[in-house]
Image (cartoon, rainbow, N blue to C red; front, side):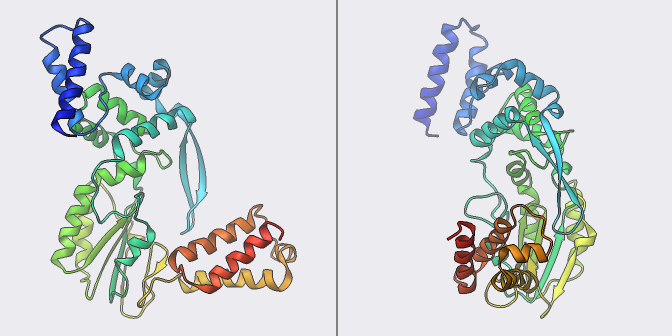
Length: 345
């Protein structure tokens, strides 16, 4: 924010403090607080009650969330692509409203490292994979228990570092955390993870640059590629990640060299163009062939498909394929066919 605008905001608060009869010796301290936050285009928050007014929620309700957020979540499991289950902690609407406010007013405008591709506008699994296209060697590594491994004290320190008072910083952090860590399901977790990993991304980028290789991170998935990726770098990366308080999921560490299939965030980066992996492509084509041959109802019966939204699921797979290969005629034609079946045309 420019100095003229900052001065205007500070003066408005000064008149407010004088009008409210705030002690003269406290006003300079308060105005310094206002100036620091205004310069960063951040909302001015003096206390939890003030925060409740800004969000538009009752103070008593907000206070309950700050002191025990666990009562404002519901938990459920979803299947992982790699097998097993992932626990999702979904906030109730009142807490979600608070998290959305924090994201839109504080987190959204923070600077992130360019190597981070998840949860960002103009970046995606496609931009992430593109950085590794056609490389001879690919190293894939994964951070274990990603969101819960980011502790509440990191988040408190982040809000304090922006200039918020200790009480406000703790309250904001508490609204973003569950059991003293970031929950998988809170609307603030993706942005906070990217913000808090800027230093890690910077360190891994510098390491990669020294080896003349490319580095990207998509949430907990890290990829390193180049003409040559030395095996010894795995230990160096593991130590760096450990220094930042994370653990590497060693089962997912893979160094792929030469003509073997290379997949980054579900996309094949082998060759000159991004493509859907062969196995995924084959399975989708098989489903479409059965529908075209036997008809949708007969196919669902023969395969004993129990998904109530099966057609939408298939359409989603084709849309994902189109995202990777936007000019693929097979995909475009079959999206039209699926749409026709869906609407009964």
